Length: 182
Image (cartoon, rainbow, N blue to C red; front, side, top):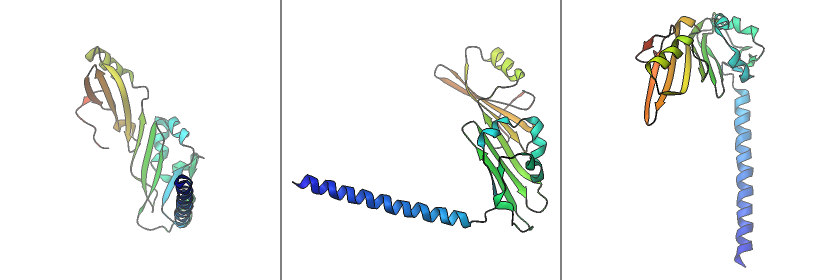
């Protein structure tokens, strides 16, 4: 006879939890709508995968990003021109983009573009085949610092049975000891 009472109490508690949780989420949404945070969002994350070396100059100044219809500028419309920065962010499972710009002139302060598990340059593949016979590449990352192709670095994770190794390469495919940043 006690079981129906416990079921009823459990149902009431669960419904109360859901109701108050919904109120909390609505409150957070209302707070975020009023935020004038200087952040630019990339609406369609799938377009990030298509950014190539030819696109890097467009990311050196915020004005170059006007070419991309998937970048949402809503947070920047009424910003006063003063000292400070704003950020462009975008990411998904395979790609991450982060760029910080000066509010006054729109120039790039710092940025990076990271792609995961994408084709590596032939010179790196040749090195892996010649110097790491029997090893398997399990993951790789390409990091472009400040949207400068000459500052591209590669991280390659390798495995041979239980042995693991992480290798790093510069933009020309030469091995380096570690990544410069990130």
